[in-house]
Image (cartoon, rainbow over all chains, first blue to last red; front, side, top):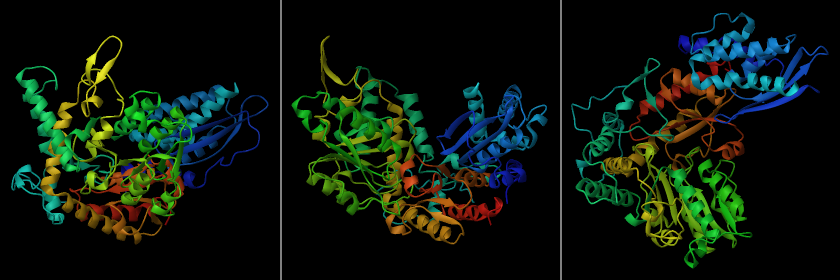
Length: 147
Length: 446
């Protein structure tokens, strides 16, 4: 069995999302699509942004292959974003990025990230931050591409 | 893991121990050698470090670190220029190192060119061909000229460093790049090579030992086929020079490359081997100071090899350190090292075969490979496997190991690799096996 640090990295919610991925499978249509690849490990994600009539985010759909962190992170993102405005979405991305760069320190208020805050443990492992960011970078890219 | 206190007994690998020995290193000897490697004496995540990533880069013994420091403290000077005493002493050490390293790989000293690493050596060859193809080198460089209709042959098992430079060379010259497909075990076979190497083939580049599967290539067969059609052979010896007795002259290859940092030396130093008559007719790659005879404002004449390929101020301290590393390896004995790693490899293969949901990439027969194993763990990504192992102080490599095409061919995007060296023991292998055995249950797969 692993150390407490390892258990904190791989919390049950993360392992669950890595196996039962929310938003998985590209849906028809979409306002924009982004493909992101982590060349060091070959993890990749293709993500589509689906907008509602009022330009808020209806949902994202995605597919890809990679480690449990990258898959769980994209899955958690899929749960988080429906109903957000573009600016709220960008705020969430900025907050998540800050959390990932916190080197285990966390952020003052991670509540806006919902369950995705469980990925805080990743920030202790610099080599894994890119894994967690993969889906978020794709999402950020679709926001730019569609505006 | 017991850590040997090197103050009690002299380290076995010191250069003074005399002639190379052929006996197999055992665990006891490996542990004794470990005393020479400061980096191996530390805890990682609360566990004694189990270093199984020597295929990526090896650790360095104190004698090598000391040699580099001693040179910098006592002799440091620019080589092949200057008449002062330090310059002369530095030049002598620099050239003596070339003799030492050449001898280690079965070459003559003027057949060894210092490079930053194996990647630079391969690029040097590729750009020499490219420059010849652009008309440089006169008539003597005819055999390096490539154009439409010519073929460069590589294999599907190559590290990106022995693949991308040839893709680029083909783009620049109009030659066609072809590859020898590997079999279902990821192995390069003579049969597959025979179907690709033909009368249009001008260059055949392949790895001696795969950095993913550890499979040993049928070098003699490929060399024979290449030479039969007048093609030149480039051997990637990165995974063989550190681990097996190597005789490049006997292998009859035309060029070979290896990296110092994988064989107990620092980073920043590698070597290119080339047959003398080839090196002396090949146009240079990097040009500038120290590689010329006469320079006018219009044109320049070049020195013979190896100097013609060593432009600019050289990495002298790393060269000295590499020679020290080679002396260390010789004192321990390459036959003994190879046999030791083979037995560790056998234990790895046997142990992994007993773990459910684990697939070993490459041939399952220890006779056909060196002491490393890359695995795919069902349902768990290599990065997660590596993270779990790291938590237990085990350093293994995860990812595609710079060999995407081979991974793709074997049906995986990434793998987890344990690679052994002279300082590893059966206890290290067992720690890895125990770690791997716990992976799937931790990630909820079993």
